[in-house]
View 1 (tube, rainbow, N blue to C red):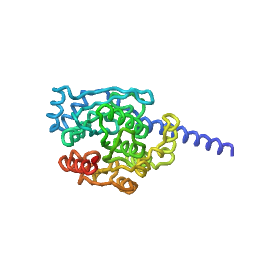
View 2 (cartoon, rainbow, N blue to C red; view 1 turned 90 degrees about the horizontal axis):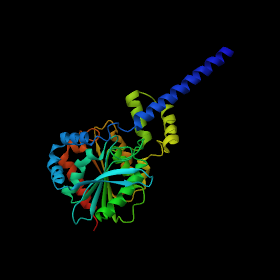
View 3 (cartoon, helix red, strand yellow; view 1 turned 120 degrees about the vertical axis):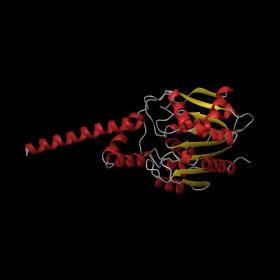
View 4 (cartoon, rainbow, N blue to C red; view 1 turned 45 degrees about the horizontal axis):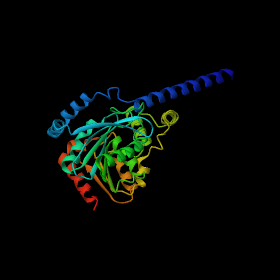
Length: 315
């Protein structure tokens, strides 16, 4: 009996240690910032290689010194960074929200769409723990919703604008949906949202990836990792749920998802779309994988976004 109890105790201890170790690994794997996040030259190089057609626009901005950047203090006390481009005499503005472990630079191709085709002022922030913004751990678009709301207030003053669009891709899409369920700054008179391949919740996305990459069930690892995240960073995977935020959103929203997305699986967009009560549109990009809808369908993507923007413009 004594031998049995000792073996049982050792087994339990090994299980606990292995679970905690696995949870710490998963937390670091999922939420640690990119160590090269501040290498802006590398980001611009990747942008040029992937979207060469946008370089005349970017080069013209640089020649005129029209591409600028700024640092602001967030309510949390952190210093966050953003790029911005003005559009003279326009009261329209767009906030472009990048994806996981990315930076604002890599999403200038979306900024060009709003600046050139829609005549918008554009602000492209680096989220918490991304690019040149401060932060020690990624929050998967959850705490970032407060930062984007602050950027909306900054942009309203900077551009003297009151007609806005928030457009995010991947984790930026999730961030966009999280923002959509909050009260907007008073200076904003009209706003719409474009979410591209965002997830229903961090829990759902991590559960899917845990199975896809490691063939593991959610219990116990996902539960313990979420608990450690709550203790360390103040949020849990379950509460970070864009689907709940979307259900509260009274503003127009365009949902975009590649129908071959196997990273944030395509089926996630259906419950998100259904959770949005009204004033909504959905476009599946044929044959596109994760965050490749624009890359694969540049003209159609631009047309879908422009049509949506104009249909929801302030009258």
